Length: 210
Ligand SMILES: O=C(O)CCC(=O)C(=O)O
Ligand SMILES: [Fe+2]
Image 1 (cartoon, rainbow, N blue to C red):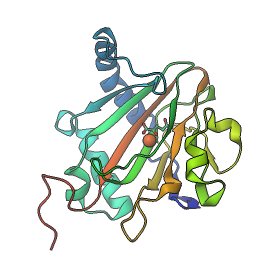
Image 2 (image 1 turned 120 degrees about the horizontal axis):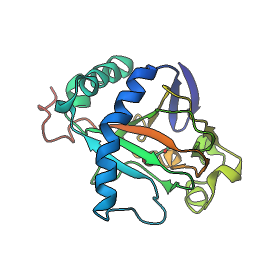
Image 3 (image 1 turned 90 degrees about the vertical axis):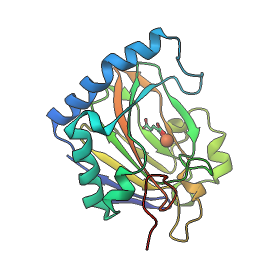
């Protein structure tokens, strides 16, 4: 495990998933993505990736990943499993997900674990242009092609790797430096997965904390 930045607090864990596990997740998502496309739910211009939530009850691997993420972060399994299902994302060549923050008042997400599920031929980095004060979060949010900006933190996809970052600081406030983008895929395609952990106590299914 490697620390990548302090603001946002971020880490890279190589080989968090095996190749077989990456393939299995892609296999679970692929038929549903095709369905959502034919239903005309294709996304807005700044989010040209396709996504689908995979209910944890449907596959042992999804529950196993909840346990693995809980063990890695020491966040209680109840907090990890009681929040959101894993969301698979697919970027065809040319697709991107523009600058944004993962946490809001309505979706208070403490942690994002992003799993890279394939080797991307070109582009597809996850970019944090405001990491560790490289530029202001407002300037970063205005970037159209954040990979080209150069500064901050830029993470290249590597199959099986997990990129973790905290969207909130230790005091619970939202960390504005956590704004990020999924950069344009310039060659090939990109498969990934978001595994979000809600802020403690923000999850309806969770028992009250002691
Ligand atoms: O594709 C990426 O690298 C990041 C995706 C992302 O930020 C998101 O889906 O919220
Ligand atoms: Fe995001």
